[in-house]
Image 1 (tube, rainbow, N blue to C red):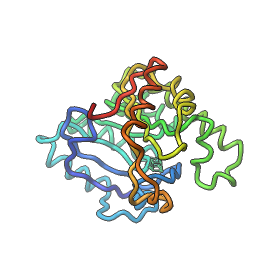
Image 2 (cartoon, helix red, strand yellow):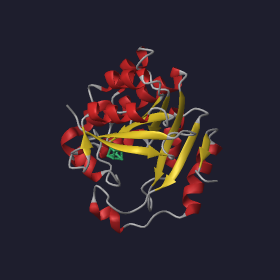
Image 3 (cartoon, protein in one colour):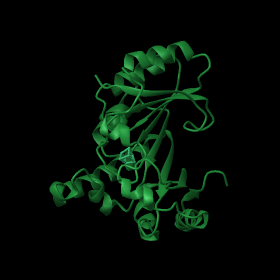
Image 4 (cartoon, protein in one colour):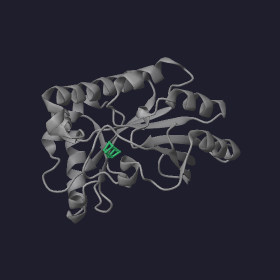
Length: 241
Ligand code: SF4
């Protein structure tokens, strides 16, 4: 059974709620700027079994407004549906953070009222045709895997848009020319009029240590990409503004 990292309280991860967050190890992408290095490599400290985490949630249900399931990539955890069902059984809503790389797992969750998340955040990382470069061993994965990754992202985004579930889209603004207006234009069809948050990359503890030497983008650069999204009819926003 997977082990999870529990954050007992967060005011930042579930809009408008005091929440607990469970972080699942492992991911089907390898974004070099990822800050969850230990989770991706599977050596994060303080891991609990999902059963132990549920015990904590049960004790704290009276003070919690919801539970965030994040990662890593939580849809890789095959017990996710059962876990969501049990969190719902505690009377707590669930927010799912996902990279959209497993549309089948997402679709299965959405099919059942008891396992449907109550809020979904979908990461939009770069133009869909660039997702192949974020796969583990992109060169070995080849063109077919790259096309599959794009398809997964597009299917997941469509499922989320059509789900009627409250949602947000999220993009990390990367340093230099790693992410530009062409990426936002490529991603825009995947978003709807739900909030699309743009946050700056921060160096430190990156999956690829070379990224720790890069500078965080300036506020104006973050604003500029949010503005690009708005110019395309989307709700591009920079949190805190
Ligand atoms: S940033 Fe998210 S999707 Fe990318 S490797 Fe890290 S956990 Fe996975």
